[in-house]
Image (tube, rainbow, N blue to C red; front, side, top):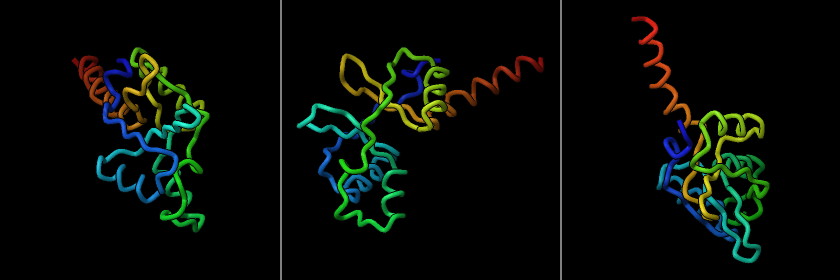
Length: 134
């Protein structure tokens, strides 16, 4: 299976000056765990995850004054839709993160998460197990 088979095409793009509360509200409304942060001043892409928001609040910082740009991961590993799910899982395990921005022709076209990979692998594994039992 490929990343294109598992990725979410709902890509929330926010700016670095969004507050963490604004980012959390937008992620919650879309039922997603990460947002792509696009900084037009640096032409850079980063990612803000639910864990980044949680860590900030856990440190006692205010989600109303903390901005996304301060908590964005900018050292990002990007996937392509043609990556295998094994490649994506290896990159996540090696890097210690749970989301990959999927890029195609220089644009973010999706996000793939550990949950997306599990959702695809679980039925395939069940089918393979059933074939062996026959």
